[in-house]
Image 1 (cartoon, rainbow, N blue to C red):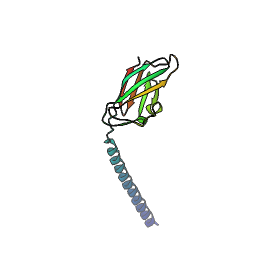
Image 2: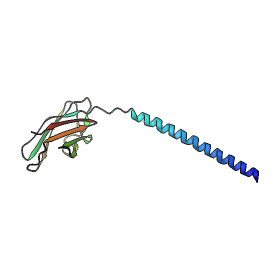
Image 3: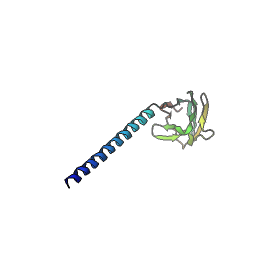
Image 4: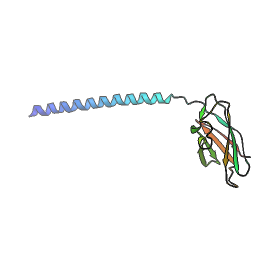
Amino acid sequence: MGGSVGVSALIVGTVLIALLAAGTVSLMDTTRTATEVTFIVLPDGQMSFVNASHNGTHLNLNLTNEADDPVNLDEAYLTFDGDRILPVSAVYTASEYIFPGEVIHISITISAGGAPARVSVSAWGHSSAMAVS
């Protein structure tokens, strides 16, 4: 009976070593993948306002893409007075992208006295803001 305890301990020890080795390989693979993800370079998506104005019932915005890459309008966001956030694609549907050097006009219906004092556009870590005149 004493011999079977030794064999059992040997089997358990071998299984534990195998599990430890498998866990180490998995951890190394995960670390390698995380390192590769760290080096992804986002495209340059610097958008800015040409002008921002309102006429009582409409907020008129002209946006341009000053970068070298087109910007998907689902990935660009407008912010009004720092609290209301809206994807550009929700208010501009003529195109899915804004291309380098292109200017787009956005007209948003607003309630009387509802014009924001300041608007901001953000895409891929770049932001631009302008006072509404």
